[in-house]
Length: 478
Image (tube, rainbow, N blue to C red; front, side, top):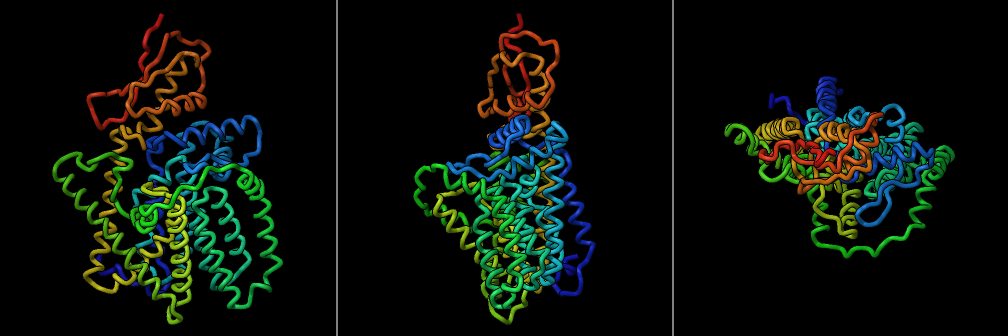
């Protein structure tokens, strides 16, 4: 099998890898009740519920860590889903399916446009633990992954053969990304620059100006209420640029590795089960660090692909990826952003492009070709173990994951047998009562309420340090 991991040959596109990627994309929809539900997720869903009830326009989304309000599109997305169901497990399932299959559609077109990319890499994004988590959570900036995928593809197509339908994809996906999260701005600026540069060189821009202008005007009109709000909002002082923030932008390869998953899963999360399984997992996580070598090598190769001797698609992808990468480093540095993996999501496909450049070079050599197969399989094994672990443990006790949505819904349903005026205490060190309060609003309230002086949320199995399940205890019943 390693011998089949070859350089892109340009001889068609195998549907075999589309089917394989389709299976992995569909696997993201398994166990939708296992997702986390804490911090921003309950706030986002509660706001969607309230604005549906009020029939109000959504002008902006949640407020970010720098005091800036993000775009309204994620709230509209969840408002639409809540019109059909208030079962949040179903909402999570539909969101995972939309994100995964929309991303796969964009990647399939990208691979047809770029025959130099090794075909097995089509499945790689669906083996990433980080992208698996972001596709499933009910957050706002995880919607950037499919929007930026379609934007990336539209830039690659437009820079080579401008057509009206791809101008429409360019503007609509770009507007959707902007109205989702401002971290998309570096990619949007880079894509606009690359497309305009290509159109000016080909002398085709003015011929398309009426139709392109109409699309731009429509997208500006849609974005205007949010832009107006953004400009009118008072923001705090800009944070001082940090050295760590500058270097943070160099490590986007984390998205395509199994490293630093302790952020969600806690320290030593991989030391579970039999010793043989632990050893295999440690080896796979270490093997996944190959992503960093591929990306750094790919950055160097992308610089070489700017020359005229490269194929048109290689040159366009290199221009877009390098420009967006530099812009993103500047954005992260100037805003003092560091350490959180979600800051990479807007440039997922920039990092992936570098990885593809590196992998295409490695695929030409038998030794490194075997290493590519080992890396991709190691990443898949890491993802499989993580998914099974979260399912068997019902989440965990880490503040950035916690008990699963399904478990919290069970507790919230039981809490609804008591009136909302009954006080609730949380005995967990890293508890988040906001999630249970919000979940109670999505569940029916029985006509006959029970009486209690108070309720307490505790761990169901306090002696099991890894088990995330929570339970409700009635403190005192008259």
